[in-house]
Length: 300
Ligand code: CP
Ligand code: NVA
Image 1 (cartoon, protein in one colour):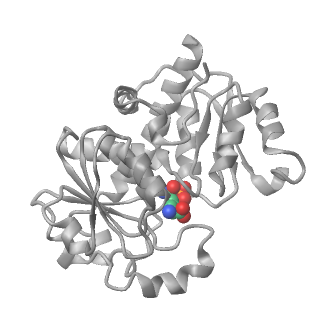
Image 2 (cartoon, protein in one colour):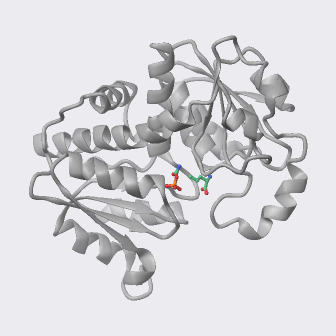
């Protein structure tokens, strides 16, 4: 059966750990030798495109990045026909889309793995990199406390599920109107834990090992940016808030960062920040995931 990676819980906790272990393998088997991986983008990308392309190269393969408007996804031909065609040339397909249903539609017809490179609902590749960064910092994830402060978005959802799957505690600090609804909360709880919900950033961060945030307005929400800036007033992670972390606590941000909005410059660039190892881990975890998916594909 072809395995896909549309949300982090498409893997079991043991599989997730195996992917993190493979991500730290400095000389992985070149499972993609002579093969391609198609990477389709409906939205901009710096990290995801570069890290995934380089992961494919490191596995011996050839990445082919395509902008969705070049091929007219669902305009010139259906998403399903695009996926069926690409599956005939490539060992895997990655897609960054607005509607999550698009990656689901691809996976439904593709006999090669489909990887979600970010959708409006989920960013599981980012969650992999974040888990690896936390594991490298603390050695073990189990029992550690992760606070997410900001918009309850794609990054927050995947990371919350991922953290609970590996035995972390999760705290969600999101302003009113920007919290998870019951459907997302049920999906997060299904990972095996109960996230706590906090009304103030200070409360979410107090004594936590990790605090993570993301932009207030995601790609596709640009016209709401002004309103969101007003609604998120008082939710900036500044030094005063971040110093409430446990003594060895760290700050993560998937990037791009807006210094002075979701986090102050002295936090983004400060001593607790691990944003650069986190960004670099996007490549290592993309490589670990692809190596794992391709091995599953070979073993059938
Ligand atoms: N963090 C992340 O996914 O960055 P890009 O949008 O630049 O790919
Ligand atoms: N939540 C952000 C993440 C960017 C990597 C977005 O979807 O734009």
